[in-house]
Amino acid sequence: MVNLTTADISDSAGAQAILDGIRKRWPWVKHLFADGAYDRLKLMDKATCLDFVVEIIRRSDDQKGFEVLPRRWVVERTFGWMTRLRRLVRDYEQRIDVSNAMILVAMGGNLIRRNAHP
Image 1 (cartoon, rainbow, N blue to C red):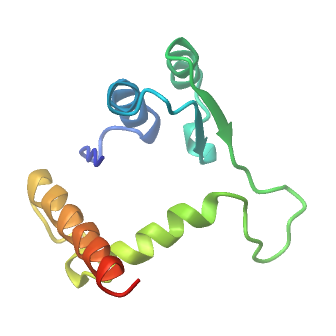
Image 2: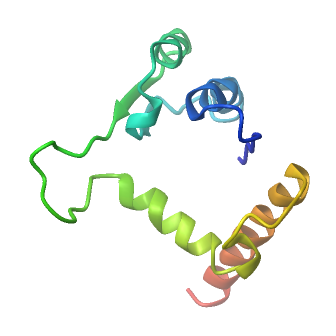
């Protein structure tokens, strides 16, 4: 599921928009992992209303240097897979629907590559 928004919409507001879609498409999903940017009252209220448990992954204040955060590496790995398609390295697209299509092409290519070479 891909949901792209314009730059004037915050991460938290964009996440609120997709919670209903997640519940409809995958009704068995109960636990969501999120970055600190998603720790907003309205988002948490809507997630609770839809029976989601949202776990905010935060970096500790006393952390020095790089440290792998639990579950955060899954998102970063997926972004790495998508940017194999050079067109997604920078925001070249003028239209959201074209960017959406490029993300689907990149992830479709990833699935084909993984199935061809298990």
